[in-house]
Image (cartoon, rainbow, N blue to C red; front, side, top):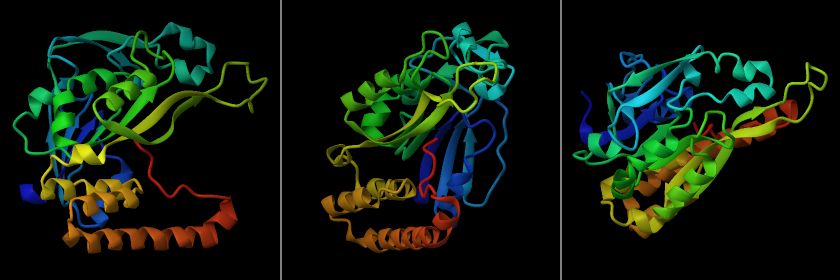
Length: 292
């Protein structure tokens, strides 16, 4: 059992049996993680690693605890609480074939983040990739978001790939309303319409976005020093060293500045290397991790 005070507390919603490979960054930099997983497979067992403590919650998450319809797709990662929309068959077959082959079940084990974590001392980071339930889950986490000020990474949809699901603009509005700022986006899905391969180089249409939300400096004012410090590695992971510095400066937390500078120097040196060598070979390289 790891020392609770030293842990960064993560919620990995839609973990699908494994953590993102990019999270190895935290382990390489000697951070210790407690990862609360919420998986399609309620009995999923993640690979044990040093300095990671897993808690697999055998619940689905929503805005309330009522039973939910769940649509198991042929490809498990495409399963959703929202019914796949038959109208997506205008796109290339690879995008809809397994998504439209599904079976419906009723899931009884449903709860909210607010209910499940009401007695916890902190939450540092939430990653949510659930094929459409991000808004409902966020509603059920509203008090936790305001209390713990976690950094939040969400996969969202720009179009109704699943019927009647809330789209990205509604999620953006919700987080802005409670005091969060949109810090970064990247493409989660881009699809082409079906043309029987007549126009294979057509530009792909934006279908889904990954969104990264971070609390305002004013929201962070309610947290104590240790709670602030546990947010710094996550900001650095996503490349926001400048915001991390301003957060430490605002709270006069000088003791963590050497660690912040060390993390930045590692990043800076790696980036210089890529600029000097890899860019010449492949014309560019993304130095920041995917949001989800």
